[in-house]
Each structure stands twice: as structure tokens, then as C-alpha cells.
Amino acid sequence: MINTIEVVLVDDHKIFRVGMEALLSGLNNISVIGDVDCGDDLFRLLRKKEPDIVFMDINLGNENGIEITRKVVARYPHIKVIALTSSDEVNNVNDMLEAGASAFLLKNSGEKELQKAIEEVLKGNSYFSKEFLFLAKQFQPGARKKSSIQLSERELEVLQFICQGYSNQEISNNIGISIHTVDTHRRNLLSKTGAKNTASLVMIAFRDRLLDLD
Image (tube, rainbow, N blue to C red; front, side, top):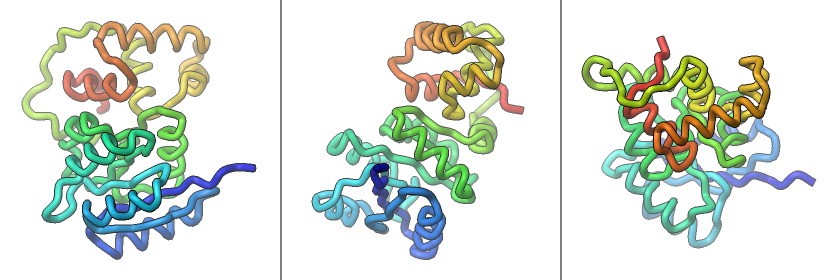
């Protein structure tokens, strides 16, 4: 029997929460157990129910979704946070990653994107759509500088797939190399960047502008 995945929506616009719930209800084994518009209501709900995933709006009117995310992850480390952002807010990616978000979705994402993000974060991976990655690059300040981190073309290719939430098997299938070789590249990426895990690897990729997404 497949367990139901329980999610909570946090956004200060009721009409968006209603739309998100409608999208999520069309996915398999998803149950929206609550929707709130502020941090106080979220933590009141979490004291009664602990979902698998919280969809978090980065900009909650007078509140900061980044700080709320930080508190959620600190108090409930088993809960995965998927950040929801508009196209003009993607420059918050590093702060949101540091706060503990596992994935980023643009607010115009469809069912397939939602399904992929949910699947990946529940496997312990990060997830970023290619559209989000492209937009995030545009918000990096200044001209692209040469990073002190030196990666091979193949490592950069693997890194791009990692940032998009692909598993080792999926990367292997897409690139045409063995899963063992993908795992070696992943370990080399962690070593060369000094990243402790996949989320910090993605954060470093943004910080040092390692990816060329044109």
C-alpha cells in the first residue's frame, strides 16, 4: 500500500492556495492537510499535524518566508520545504537554500513539475527546474567571474543534471555513461567544491556561477 503524502501550503494569497490545492489534488497520493497565510498559523498547525512537505512562499507580505523556513527546518528536520517564487524573486535562492529549502518552483509550474519536485525531495534530493535555473542566473550580480573551482566539462554536465534533481540513474541514461561513473563524478564535485551534501553543492554552483544555462 502506498502511503499518502501530506502537504501544507503557505502563501498570503488565498486564490493561489486554492489553485495550488486543485493542482495537487490531481496528483497521485497527495493530501493537502492545511493551507495558511502566515508563520504563526503555520506553527499552530504544525503543533497538531506534521506533514511530509511544506510549500513555502518566499515573500509572505509582511513576513519573510526564508526565516520561517529556517525555523521549520530547525524544529521539524524531517519536513521538506519546497520554495515557491515568482520570476522576480529568484535572486533569493542562496538564502533560501541556506535556510534549508530542498527545492524551488516558479509559481506558474504545472502538475509534472510539482510531481517531480515532490518525488525528488522525498528521496532526499534537491530539485530546480531548468526555467528556474535560467532565471536565477540572470539575477546573479555583475559579470560572470572565473571561479577558483576548476571542473571538467563532464563534471559541469553532471552538475547541471544534479541541480535539476536528476538521480544518478537518470543522469547515466541521459549522458550515456555508467551509473558508477556518475557516482564518481558526484563525489568529485563534492570534494572539489567542499560541499557537504547535494543542497550545499547546488548553493555553491549558484554562488560561484559554475553553470552556463544560456
